[in-house]
Length: 316
Image 1 (cartoon, rainbow, N blue to C red):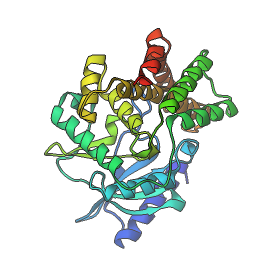
Image 2 (image 1 turned 45 degrees about the vertical axis):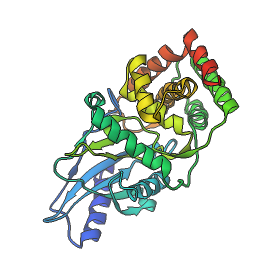
Image 3 (image 1 turned 90 degrees about the vertical axis):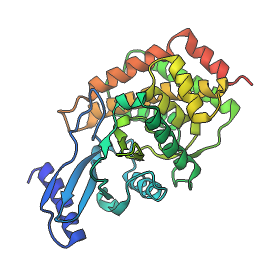
Image 4 (image 1 turned 180 degrees about the vertical axis):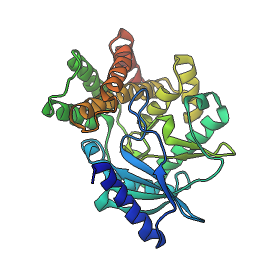
């Protein structure tokens, strides 16, 4: 039996045990790709259907263990669902890295970048993420700085093909950590994923959050930065977006969020670099995705205005 068939059989058996009968249909729910966007990489997503019941299963891959704690991600998904801003988790099997979730049903769709232009959807996204930040703390605490260090070490150990100017990139991350550390942080539960494909949009433009693979207690402005980096290409619009989230404009806090958004590119570039070096899934374009993220990080971090941002985020 192939690995793919073996993984499918695990999901099929769990689905059968939940409903006491095999589903009439078990099929992949998303198309997986690592470029031009990152979608469905962390786990197989299955849609299981019975006569009057539908469920979604997420089965984590073992090759992502260097950046995702599957048991923690599933626990965060279950906890967040209780806030009403994520699909209900109907069962989880941490020993098999498998999660069963509510199927949202007709009228729901995956978000796309076009939704950034809709102010009602932006309001719903912000409300959902702020609900997480105001909710119970997660068991896990982390930051983009912790993860960049860990990911870089993994890439070195794996003899991954790192970019020529990686030391300059890491130097900016170190300086950013010093600047933000100087003003202090107050970690709160955070989604920490700006990817629009990890949002579901409902028929009334309501929003549900998906994928809690990076979820942790962290600086709330890290979450803001991930959101701004995904939703806005230009500085004036990003400033307006920050004010929509924060309720008022604050230059220092805005710059802090923008720096976090920049560092999110480095985090994902290192993730993709590690996957390119070690994942057995050779048909996915991990290196291509890494190059795009490194390019985006370099454009924003290796110019003089990047140092200006670090100075301005400490100004009071």
